[in-house]
Image 1 (tube, one colour):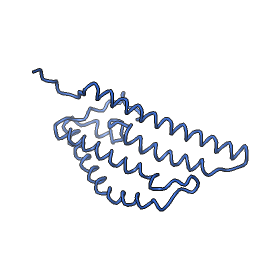
Image 2 (cartoon, helix red, strand yellow):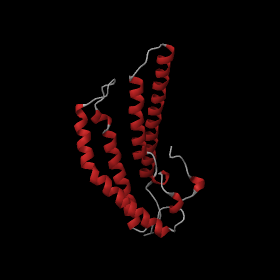
Image 3 (cartoon, helix red, strand yellow):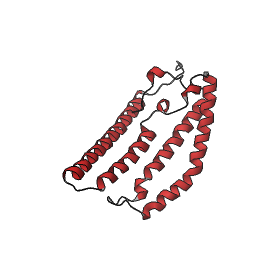
Image 4 (cartoon, helix red, strand yellow):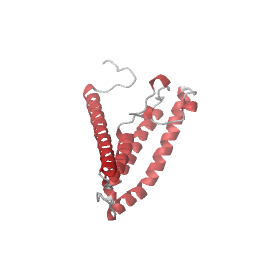
Length: 181
């Protein structure tokens, strides 16, 4: 039986499904940003052309912004696109990067895991309040934060597992750096 070479290999169907899910997540963010822009233009038109200020457009923009940021951080931004202190990270070797990854992954999983019960309690409690114009219940509005926390915990558990297995994160390459969008 031939042995699979080490490295990052996925089954073709799984990789295709992952790319498809990522594309749909990016599409959802693009639609939300488009809706934010349209609401902003409507707000300007209503206020300055019709002299009729609207609160709902501002509220919609804020709600969509919260969802775009947290949904994007949970499902679209890759680990290597996250903000980190590259000045130090890029100067150390692979073994130190692996230790740094493991330490920060443990710290983040512990902090998010410790805070999750209180956050869950607070978000579910907020069903008693809703937004002023659109009447969106705050528990629905802030539910994306719960999804974000679970995604971050899962991501950093995976990174910690890889670091424990001896896989060092890729060396930082400034020529391949992107905005994450």
